[in-house]
Amino acid sequence: MSETDAPDPHADVAGLPFETALAELEDIVRQLEGGRVPLEESIAIYERGEVLKRHCEGLLKRAEARIERITLGPDGRPTGTAPLDPA
Image 1 (cartoon, rainbow, N blue to C red):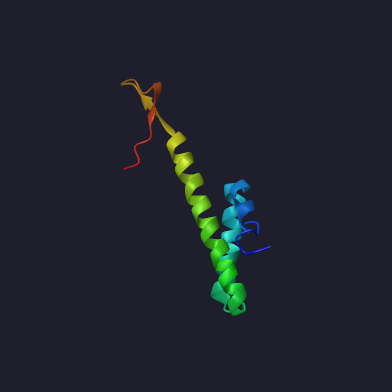
Image 2: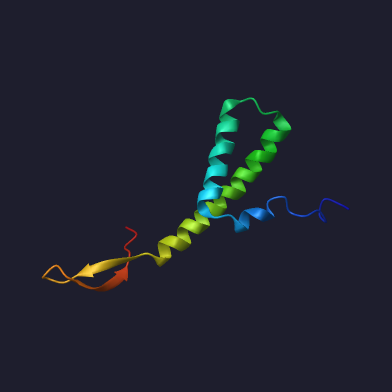
């Protein structure tokens, strides 16, 4: 089997919940900052960290798109919802 036929070692990331992916990413950062990981392993976990980072960013963007803010009337009572202003 050639490298192009090998399964993607990061395919499992797509199914990870945000909290799990973030915890793994934080662990990778700690390992790399500790400086005790051999070079080849450092490269591999750095690459996984990049995949985890992109996954977390995507999940956050999707969550942000779903968030709405509650609009209040002059009397302070809720009148409905509107898209969250990202600014």
